[in-house]
Image (cartoon, rainbow, N blue to C red; front, side, top):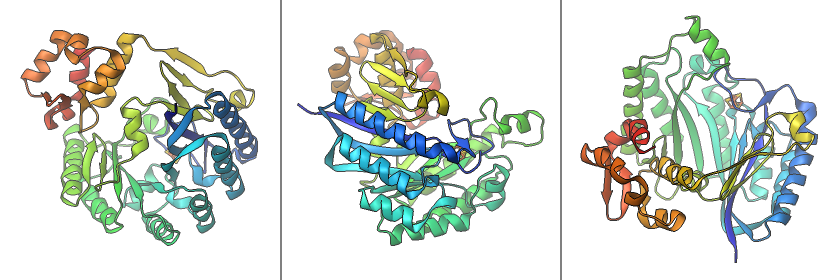
Length: 372
Ligand code: SF4
């Protein structure tokens, strides 16, 4: 028997810290790159040995900024992943990159080890917005990175795009969409900025130094992005994600469908049913081998989690899948709590699939609060 899993590698390094970022990523810690790489290789080897039946369907190298790692370190990680785990023949293997750090050598190394999907943190086509939030790249870097990626043989490329940046206007979003579409991405992730506690962004916004777009304006940006991308052949398949036919991100889709995945590295999360775990979130704690924090989900929490994640997908959540995972129907799990969202058109249940309507996607939190 084989056990299909995802594999996530977290690279906790960045060139510098963006104003809005609360991800576990550290700038100016180049001396830690080697020990962290070594430790990640050991972690892969141990986890691979403990899960001998695992077959990796998707691998995602994220961060942080994977592309700040020196090529020999990345090569070591990729070699170690292949040596520690069995990979499905058609495995999707993605790597995140910051457009300001992409080099031909790095891309060549990724190709050699079977990476077949790139995700570029392009964020915007407007240099003044990129600079304001501390991104280290310009739009010219994004164009060049895409060009280099094509030259290296990559055809499956995601561009990340942010909405709701301080000072961003609808006009900026319109221009960014057309700038991005000219680059022919197969996938666009379109995220609204969240002001996280403890970030520079939070300080600037709370002091009134940076002004964020009003809620209505941000909604307008999202709707513009959704309509423009759909008109240009990038179909929405998740609240924030759009892809050309056949190019949705399998790794993320599997996470939303609560498939199992193994997380490797500082602060990496993993899910090996029924346990969710999170590795130590500082480099020293990770290198000391401190244990991961584990949470065993109750049956009720697991059912709620299935719906909370699955409803993010426009394809919805099949009841057969839900029964297979939890041994009961939606009605048995949520009873009359389903009535109101079904009646007022936020949810739809058709042909054995529960899904949010377009309106329901806009107010997803209200549905979840009722189901909780
Ligand atoms: S590049 Fe990404 S991970 Fe690094 S600081 Fe910026 S937002 Fe955070």
